[in-house]
Length: 172
Image 1 (spheres, rainbow, N blue to C red):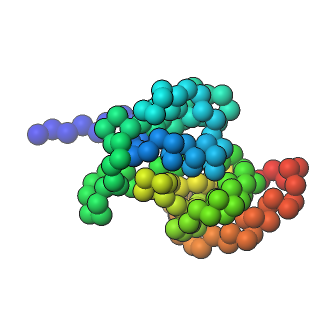
Image 2: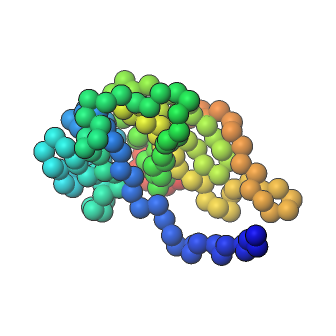
């Protein structure tokens, strides 16, 4: 079999949205809308809802079509590990952390990856989330050959929350 190397995807391609099966739409909306602050752009009763940031049609879809009253996948099964929500600045990530702490949401981990800073948690249906902000590409750690040298170091959450005390003029 002759396998040819595939061409790279266009550099402007982006992941557009995620659509999650949830057990209870109202419970999921309390998390994604009330805690994280996403706007509800459309709702279909107790079956589905679409949420966004900044007026986009939707970044997150939630539905109970195949999952009403269901339970999370069992450990050891395939499926979604986590999805990531990219915050534009360190200060906006700090605000997300403040919202989580205020709502009593358990944080499973927090890491500095060199290229980004990330907070890990689960939504009410057990779906993994990564809330993160990127560092400018010029600051990304690289090996001598130019490859990325991402790491996993502990993220100082207190330092992250200090971003909020520095005020909105702080742009990181």
